[in-house]
Length: 605
Image 1 (tube, rainbow, N blue to C red):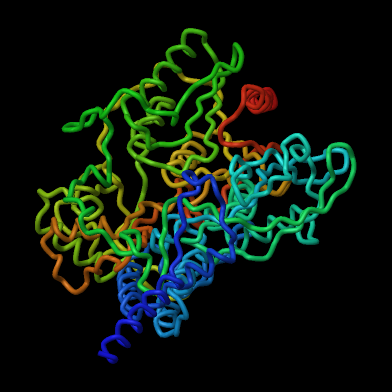
Image 2: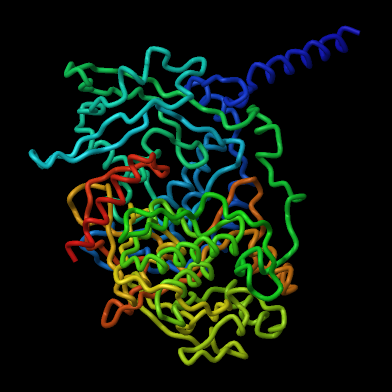
């Protein structure tokens, strides 16, 4: 009896111990509450490192990154006067991570993420389990400005985020007092330099430091996601010059915004946001990955609203502005109808000038980008020039797709590729034997350089503008990068970059890559090709973490030596620079300021 009672008491004690070690965070949107960053760090670190998760994750990532288009190039990236030099030996670093003794689960995931961040390639990203999906936040929205008289750049507070009114936040802060204040120093360092240093270490959306600055200023400097980075615990000290001319030092603790309800403890995160949910896996559908335009055969519009991805404005009697914030609208046909309406109006008014505003455009459907090019210029074949690195996985898919061409497997079917004369391939000769290049100091095998025979209807321009100017903050990536660089290099359209570290040159696009894929893509292709059990196919990640990588590399439309360097590693500066730091969504006054400033550049050309 005594022994039975002792066991019961021991069991109760263990339950109490586990309960004491468990943490619960409620969604900040629901609770209207922020959380102490040290408390959240302690909670997340309650989840112990799991050897199986470490090994399975590294095994999957290693197999996947064999197919990374820039696997060799990032060992020693091509020299550039303006882009960051990348020197990362992925296949050497991954075993080191695998063999490290980690003190907690999140410590391992943050270390793996840090390796990916060093690539400065937002197509190629690892993020940890979704249960770590919270942000460390500071209350200030930031902007920057340029003083022409003193030739100095400064950082200002443009507003205070709404979550600053939540419980456990910063109740003493008011928009009336702080909006418009100049931040002179952050932690004792000049504010512009402090943000630049942060951007260079933690930013990854570009290899251009000036573009990284724009991204950090927009949100990265004040909103740090736990799925990517270790949450900061040291308070920030802001040295401010207020609007009334007085100076003030302000020390602000980091707080955590929980994006959902989360539980942490020795048993894990306690819900599906930690483990992979296999019920969410989908069956293969090529349109999932290479979504064709709405007027393509076999596709139909989902709805008639492209959302807020495109709109046009009339700046004045001479100039129209087309704002494209994404090439991934809800409906391609509705998107193109807006382009057509703009062209119809401009044609009726005989408008000579067009501004294409691409700020913050992260990409989308490449066929859609090419269709917009068709409508704007007299050019019939804007398709890109791509290749693919040889790897065990890529070779497996290429051979299986060549044996089953009728499946129409994206990226790997011979029918997906054509030669410069426009003739589609019928066998694996698009891939094998391919070409040999020296990248990153080592010799590697690549497919031939082929054209993607993107299928879309030919639509001739209703109106041809005499001058077109592209406007970008450099955060124009993927499809947007291909779209803008093509117009620049082939159709001689000029570009304008805004913001950044002024007045140094700034790229008007970032991360053209070529094509991004994920583990879901690989799993579904393996099923469609009936090679799922082949050992070269990586298993899905053991957690709800995510990994993606650049599969194809696209080359520029340039001549000479530059034509042999993947566009990812070329610095393409804008012709014009404007000292404007603007949010993604503009007020009417900001639209007028931006588009009038760009319109004035037409008069200078």
